[in-house]
Length: 216
Image (cartoon, rainbow, N blue to C red; front, top):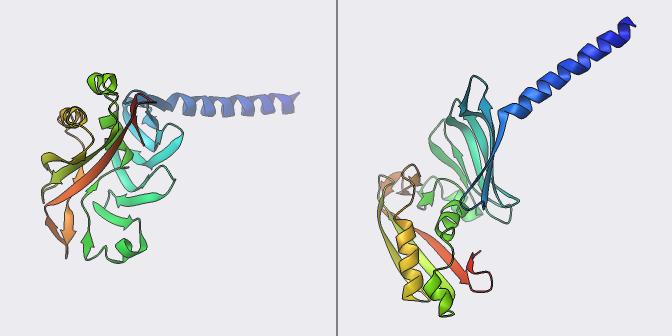
C-alpha cells in the first residue's frame, strides 16, 4: 500500500509539473493567421516571453531562439520555406554570425548585405496580408511587384521604391502597405570592411488571381 501511495504521489507531482509547463506555453496567430508564435512565458509575469520561442509560417518553422524576461538572448536561427537557414544572429553579441551561401559566409568578415533581422517571410507576409487589391482583381490583373527598401547605415528605413510591377494598382497597394511596417522591426545595414553603409533590401511579391491573394 505504501508503494502505491508513493507511486501515486510521484504521478501527481509529474502531472503538476507538466501542467504548469502547458500553462506557461502560449500560441498566438498573427498577420491574418498566416504566422503562428509558440513560446513560453515567465510564470511570475505572463506578459513576458521567457524561454523557447518558435515562429511558424503555416506549418513551416521560420524562426527559433530564446527569450529571457521579454528580451531575445543568445543565437537565433532564421529559415526560409525550404527549411534552409537564411541567417544566424547572436543577440548577446549583437552580431551576425552566419549567413546562407558558402561564398557569402566566406566574405562575411569583409562584406555583408542589407538584411531584415528575422526570416524574410515576415516582411513578405506583412505586405501580402492586406489581401488582393479589389480593383486589380476585378480587372484580372496579376503578376509580380519587386519592392526595394532603402536602409540607411543606421539600420533605418529611408524610403520605398518599386523597381518592377505588373500594374500601377499593385504598386499602389504594396507601397501603401509598406507605410505601416512596425516601428520595432530591425534592419541590419550593409557592411563593407566592417563599416556600415547604406543599402537596399529586396522583396518580390507574387499576385495570383486563382488564390485571390499574393503567393510565394
